[in-house]
Length: 167
Image 1 (cartoon, helix red, strand yellow):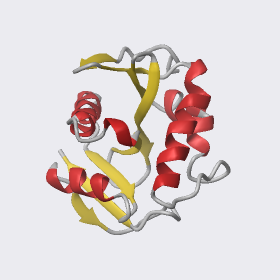
Image 2 (cartoon, one colour):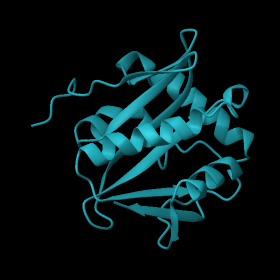
Image 3 (cartoon, one colour):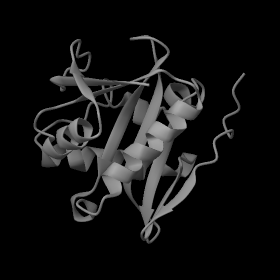
Image 4 (cartoon, one colour):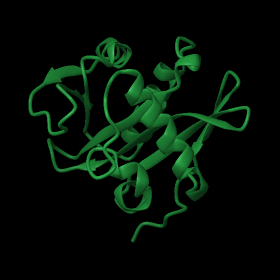
């Protein structure tokens, strides 16, 4: 049985703190994701693709995944997460990589992706899958620039791209 408090993420990047999700983060994290989706004309799906944000314990912590919060001056400004999936071989999916617009372009997204990958490889997973939407141009660019290969089999309705990286 996995302990819900088994993760120990706390990293500093410039003036930002990347840390483990805590129960009190639920609404603020959901609001960051909802606002970024709205910025790109994508809808919040509380009963669908975004249910995992409202049920972090079930989707991430109890399955061997992690959900991280990015803070700046005690405000939640971003998220990043992964959990094991049945697709591929010994695989996880990186999910919920969102950063508020004011904090983009500082290298934070690339740093977050690299930290997620490090955590994933340390747990001996072999594949990382990511689904995204073409409209999220910054996300597409960061994945393609960091060795993610286009694949097929999009499973999330609002997404039209899927990528994989194999160790």
